Image 1 (tube, rainbow, N blue to C red):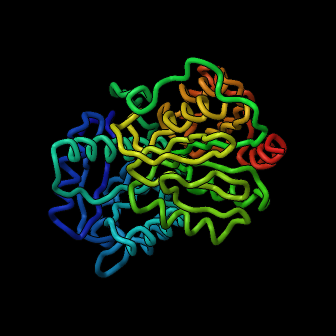
Image 2: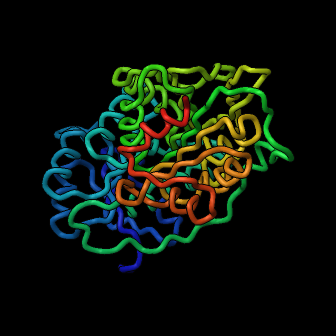
Length: 358
């Protein structure tokens, strides 16, 4: 066994899924599947022999469901857990509940498709697991290995960089937010702290397709602002937060004084779809100095370059601080590039957004 690799325990009642995940994960040289288990009981026996760095966990299994197992892990021996879910309404709702109970991210069960689909699935699944290995949980015994970032597309493949200042002569403020690992709970805390008349918000949270609708619906029940999954052409208005749908890029656009979103296909940008860089570049181009940018917890650098473009266009940008981040990757990269005006703990971001949005 290579001690430098991220050791993963795959827990799923389907032998086909276990084998597929093993092949996908081990296609990345920094990951090793130390074992697979058909149910939580077998997983417990394996954990007694060796503690993994990350667990991928099915939520629908016989003998003990994944949610119950997740709660026991979090209370007895916290380990970063990635939920492996089906692309169904029930599966997405259960996965969102798992995030609330301590899971760090979601992947969808691998399935057959085109070569491009399989390649993108490999990139996403491996990136999520590597990101999970960076999560700070109690009693972590072995530091996560350094992650080598693969070559990636920039936002150029979706939207051209602005050649001048964004359209002016409007005072309406728009808030553009980007988040990844740990972002579901960070966004919940942020949005719950906002009053009903907050400025319009557009959010990119790295999450698979069909899960963002359940996530938005859950937040809508908890928050004073209206929260919904973005649809192409939706207006960006005060008192509403639009969440980019999984597997679609979401851009901020403007026609006269009306702001709206464009939801479109496109290649992975910064290894993601939706990409924070794409949203932030569109905000720089169409909103400029009227925009407030927020970058939250997450691994990698998606959003860092876009945030710098926003700042250069006159936006005011906020980064979540390291102490309150689950993974201080994306904010750190934005700060390093010089695209951030202010660094704040998560608990203070909403108040500053409200002040800036007046």
